Length: 293
Image (cartoon, rainbow, N blue to C red):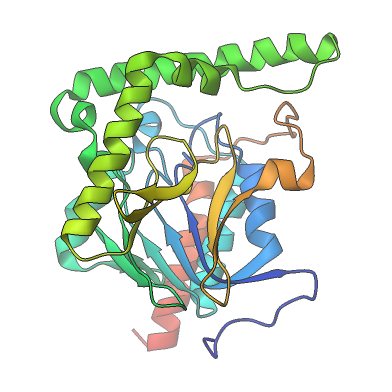
């Protein structure tokens, strides 16, 4: 274990590695309050941010950032500061980071890479990639991708009103948006093609498995002899992939595990751009002081 890893509370879960993606910080749909509580509940040697962490598409159109988004950012930077290996693999929504990849940029201890490789404790070689490069719509029809993003946002809003009505009638939360996605025949085919393309790519390059995100559908299964691992999202499902100290991999459903309500809306206090950047500015200042720059 990394000698710099901070002391752990007895209540914390201890993992060798944690993989999260599709948090979409900067959108109202992000369940940042749940993500912040998950990050606070655990410690790990490796933290992989598997794309679409910050939603640059949405932030270009309208600014949204609250105290829970801020807590997530601060928690990630704290992991990096205290010795956790933090790797950020950008996706299509945070593609603005990809232009700096050739420079080998490391920001506040967070390594930014186009792809990453991880070897589990029991020797499995895993390719880590967001997955959008295997999505033909994102690659070749950007306008359709943007329209799809708009439709998904609308579906999430409809989902909220739909579940408010269910709650009043005494029914539990049920994701209408996720159900609609899986009922559309072409969407199901697209997910299958996506999983197969990623598995085949990983297999061709000698990997035992692939970790990805992008499609907001948590999954762990064998595809064409390769372990396909999708860590899900923090908009609808609030899931993460974790590696235990013995190399065992597990998908964690944070909402189900803690009996949380997806309809619960915490008090949100919107922060300005300057306030949102304060954690990064503080970390950069601390780095300069520690190096004597």
